Amino acid sequence: MDVRKVAKLAHLEITDAEVEMYTPQMADIVKYVEQLNELDTENVEPAIGGLTPEGERTFTTREDVPVESLGQKAALDQAQAVLSENPNNGAALSVAAHALAHLGDEEGARELIERGLRVDPGNLNMRYNFGSALAVALNQPDEAFTHLEAALAKASGTLIRWVEIDPDVDSLRDDPRFQAMLAEAKARSAPKRGEPANA
Image (cartoon, rainbow, N blue to C red; front, top):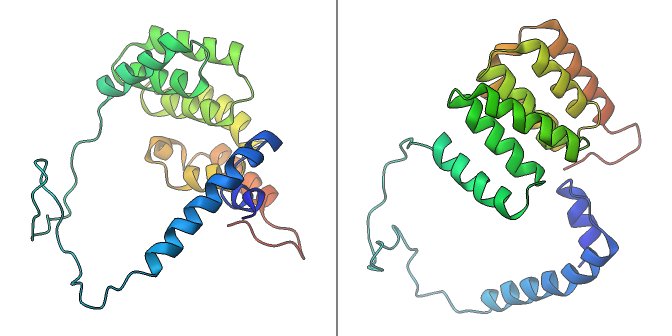
């Protein structure tokens, strides 16, 4: 199992120690799936439905309808729990800042943005999330561009594809700065002639 190749396809950075740790785990997963392929399923009907919370089998499917998301308060609570254990966690700082901005606490959001920039300025996802919070919740497009430009200057295909569809930056899409920034990021991350395309 080539863990480095899998990590590259998923646009993940991986250390030598992680390769050593994940290689046997990935091999075990593949072995398990191969065992499943040996099962005789000829007389097994496809399952429709699932299980109730009590563990009883259901034979119906539910309608595919949108439901409420986690919600800003719940996201904030979870991020604060992580920050109580690790005050410099960039992902938790960005989630908490985003939630505070949506909940109307501009001062709290800005405090976390400043903290994040002090402790993890190279965290591209965090910078992007700060930018989207400034754009959508605080209506500060100029400040948003500062963070979005920093994130997209080094972004991989995964983040670039997210920027193309993220509704949090819809208010910026018609701005020539946004269009130029995204075009430059896409051009930079495009495979060069003769190189394989990223997954």
